Image (cartoon, rainbow, N blue to C red):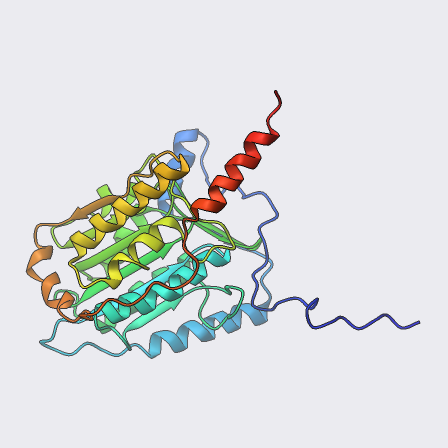
Length: 329
């Protein structure tokens, strides 16, 4: 008897990324623990098991996306938006895609927006995020921007560690983006004016390295704290929902949006009885001389949040109740 044909509902979803099933490899080098930790400043990246066709397709997508970014208009400060999901858990791809729409509209950067994100369950149409793709994108932006006049708005979303941001694509891509490497890439590209929004656990480690008079940095957590909501099936992390999906849709200045988002995150964490993530905000003293002109382009009417809220009080309460019931007497 011939095997029954698979129904449409049981066929694999080509827009669903492969899950993480294997242990994360040790990417450090050196004899001592200190040497191995120091080696992560070089942002090691490992890719294995990708087919040649996959590699060619990703290079094609990245080349097309970079070539589509227009050169800046001389004498007119403009924003360029770059969003990236460095982990293949679909929540990050969904967040990076919507962040590009929100930030592009807020800073008048339609046509000057690039998203690096893998499949999110419904689509797989962008260059995938990786450390090398991010560094190539930053380098290319340096050739189309006026580094002293234009503004880079960078949004990264992924898991994190105290060494930096984790790159993790299924069981094929691994790496760590260090604060040192990100700083070097921005400086090499000559990009002086920056709004850097980093959503990940321990993302506060980026503040000391990247702070400058012309840099605004917002992070999801302090350097010693985790952030929340990074469940694969979610539409948003806590920080992404609070800042991107809510606060930055409002016609308010960046500093006020950060305060609004941080209050929301703190409230959600308190209700869920999570240890506070303590999002960080660092706005350099020169940012106020150029950011208002860029933010003057933001929509004057707030747009509505999209997707499922990251904080579902009823679901968290139910999970807590189930966990309590499972404990032995």
